Length: 85
Image 1 (cartoon, helix red, strand yellow):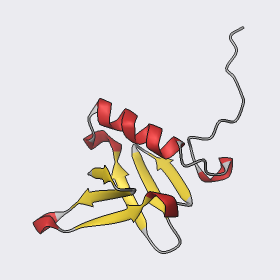
Image 2 (cartoon, rainbow, N blue to C red; image 1 turned 30 degrees about the horizontal axis):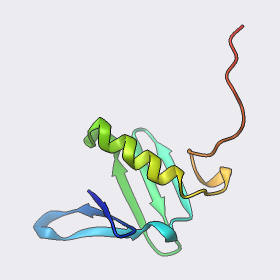
Image 3 (tube, one colour; image 1 turned 60 degrees about the vertical axis):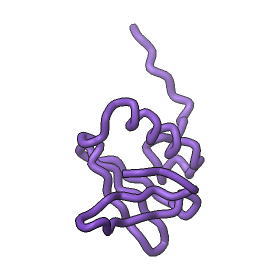
């Protein structure tokens, strides 16, 4: 997987792969270690278990910067804080 020039490209067989423009992402779903990135016309699934820790941190930062509505991303800042008893 590569992120460059405003796109995320997921490598596939024989050099073919899917790509999605970051500025077109309108929904991010996180489920069971996978991210699903959606635009109006495309969907890209990313298995986060196959990404090294540093790259995953980078990916999370990039996805958080998209500033999607709270109901469209797991990266939204809800303002809720965990308090200990």
